[in-house]
Length: 401
Image 1 (cartoon, rainbow, N blue to C red):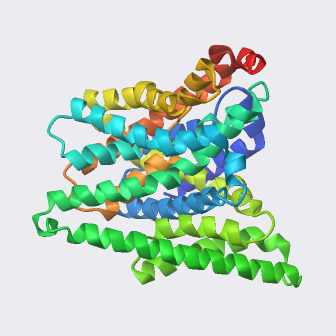
Image 2 (image 1 turned 135 degrees about the vertical axis):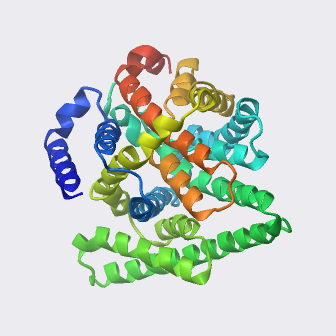
């Protein structure tokens, strides 16, 4: 085990030193560390109960930080910053993608329980900008397009979370006769409500306390990012102690914090995009090492078909429909539809659901499909991002617009 730790540390260090040169060649961080993880997994780093528990803890920490940082985008100026395009993709495109995905799953996965079909669709709906990072740094792509994708991918994991929890609850309730009276759904409703309340009160209180501290010059601004980490921890465990859902609480607290704190709260996202990248790197590494080998061995033809249709049909159609009536060109709609890579949210939500919701009939196929979707998406979207301008004619679209 110590050899694996040393090897991983060396590779992370080398990646940090040469990251800019690597990214210029169209190779993304997720591609590297998923691949490295697969190699380590093949060399003996197998999935055990202890390793799964360690990853579960890491996944929960990473997911909580991601949700909080993404939620801080929803401040008073969010509507102007996010814009009509991203708003429609989030509020219209996301539900359409889940509904259409469930229909595809129903056709390709006969015999699956209904709510587990919806659960899988919800798990495959969130997107991850990290897998197409070269899109954000490509100045040949019009700024409005880059900003729209960034805003959508930043928020859709938090908006997909209630769907994931809801469908997981319905699936468990339907599969367990003892929960058939709806007691689990009532428990989930309480968890979501209490979690939202803890997040609202905690985020608002933290924002007001920050205002007081800044106004009276009591705060060392060098500790702003540490404060974010501490706040996420406080909200997460407070919600758990109160009987609420910790992830809902963290997301709501991010919204409340952004709206009650005066001035910019960009330090929250800076933490995720800087120091928090270490957690993302570790997460992709463990996904590759612990789950990818199992997924590669267990994936079925039907599972591959679900993933392919999700990437090539479900997302593009959902985005196309959501942008009808806007000033987007056909090229832009196709671009938005294609660059919806599956990443950390899909993998972490899947692990969270499998480990926290018992009595799912298809728990292993759900996890396998989600992990394979991340693996396939990492390479398809990562490599295609380098050729986005030429393929989708975005230069000409920008001139026409």
